[in-house]
Image (cartoon, rainbow, N blue to C red; front, side, top):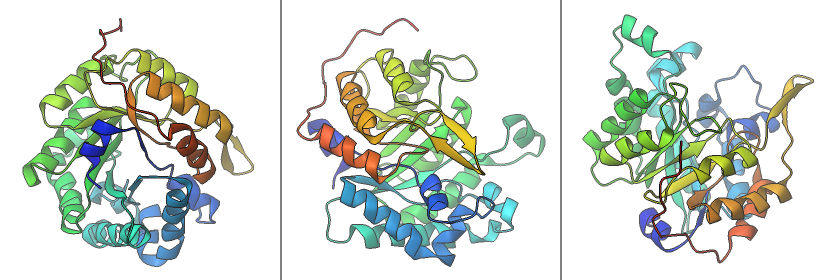
Length: 299
């Protein structure tokens, strides 16, 4: 599957959460989720297969936190290459013989910028270590997701582009309902900078539920190829687990609204499972993306 060509012609259905699905499958909260690629690959495989059966055309590898900074919290900093390559192999097993894009998931380093600067951490080198492994394993795209800080995602994007000028890159950030980053910078300004640096798709994921995602998309012009990956509503903590309250049917209805606001790549984040994706896939079937450039709405 050529992701960029597909996005020009049609709306593409992504997958849902990996972390919450692993926990639903019995993986303890304290376990390093990326280590499961090596210790229990079948559980990851079954999640990919469930999303594909539900209608996902893009699936993300179980590598969100597979960088040396995050893995070091579990004593696994030497396993970056191993765990990333294993994750891609699992995803490719699930997609064998199918026209589906395998996107390498890359998350932020999980440490505040001030602390990284104080420690003189070379962020680009850390990102490149992970991204190199994903490229070595031949992913079809790189998905930079859940970034709150523009400078950090710029470093990650530059790390990708120094390694590959051709690989499609999705840059997805976290913002408020007012479409602003935690720094108060309008997310549209961030998208313009990321597009200039080589991002092919820009969008928003996590934190917000479907309703808030719709409000955010209203503030984003169609100058960009846009992705939208909301949570399944806002979570509540109950009996040792997070419960998300957006029903699959509601999620499917919201996906149509995302298309009306210009999104072309649509999936889900925390709390979104195969049932949500099934309803979304049905709702998106046959829909065409909006192409006309819209005026920039007030931010």
